[in-house]
Image (cartoon, rainbow, N blue to C red; front, side, top):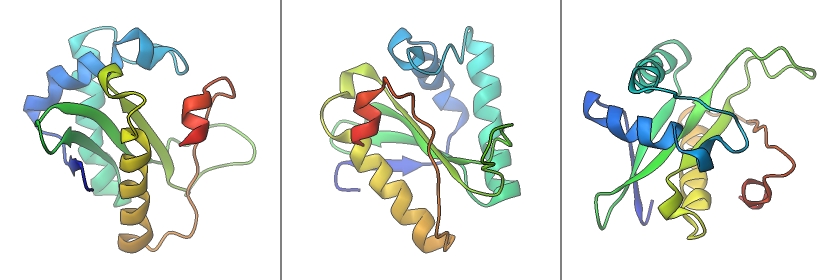
Length: 140
């Protein structure tokens, strides 16, 4: 995108992933994801499997100008037990480090991810689950 680089995760991203998913602001609407660096490592190890099995997955997101880690964004099929079912529909997810909130980065990374899946995967439909209290994500 104009300000962001979306790329596949590497082993060097484990610390970034832990900082993101263990932060109370990130967990506010989705619950704690990474209680330890090991939890974040295991989460990050799943990302290549998404790409290999589904043809889509998550990216690590960095600011072009500074090289700073912004967050993660991408798609998955979590096989959630909900109705209506989302099985087979790419489910969008994203999270940003708190320093990048309120600056348009979430909208930019989501537009980039959506543009990619629309073109590369020719997917007419995606989904996102948002807590109604998360007004910032609703705006995205």
